[in-house]
Image (cartoon, rainbow, N blue to C red; front, side, top):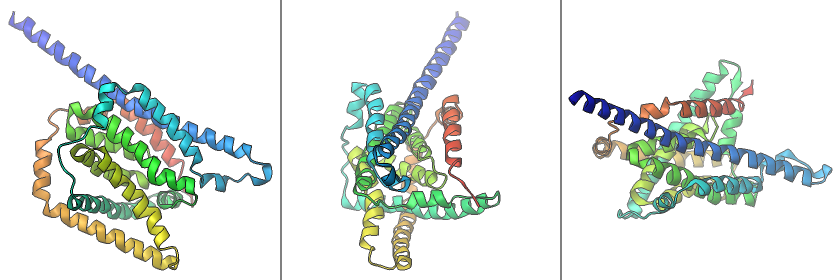
Length: 320
């Protein structure tokens, strides 16, 4: 009788594990479909825009500066998320928390976010040196990652609509969908997918670090605050800074913006060091005790998605 009970218990455990893997896999595949639909829709919209113009006015350079194809792509991608999100998960996505955001906390989160910029700069230099050994360069991807908006439509997309949709998808749908398996697990996986889907060898690691900060912010303070941080990163540290320095010589403008990012980033690093005991306490409190992280990262769904997106990112490398 005891052996039968043990057998049933092991069978139920295996069944629960299989169900969990399937549920997590489904969430990852839905975000993959979102990414694929987004890319296809943006390309299709760009082609339509190109051929709707007269032959004399057709220009790929002009099209790349427009945010209109991304408006179409965003709408198509969000339809996928809306179609598969349950009413219960929709309520969780926009749920308020009981923790109050203060100006001091917001500034501290900004500084931690900017520390990722410092790490990303060091990584970019190391990556360029590494791929140079094989006769390639990531300069084009670096320029794409740091490019500012040159049209109003691209400004609206990059500074507002893009961050809004990404927060709903990654800090809303994906993070909240993964939360039943652990808060830290949900933050890490949602940040990983957020970084991966930038499909840029230079930008993806920074996007992962940014995703960690935004994921924590969304969990602790709500989606509106992760959205606010995201807008600050894309708009204030991006297009707004470029606009404010527009009359400054290029070399000086780059030095000023670099100094601002370095100062904020170093403050963030110091803050993380001083608060390391609090950080360690939070990590212990939400320790991933079960093999969810390993199963997910090494699972077939993630391996397929990561491989395909990595190949896509490598296509952006240039020959020296």
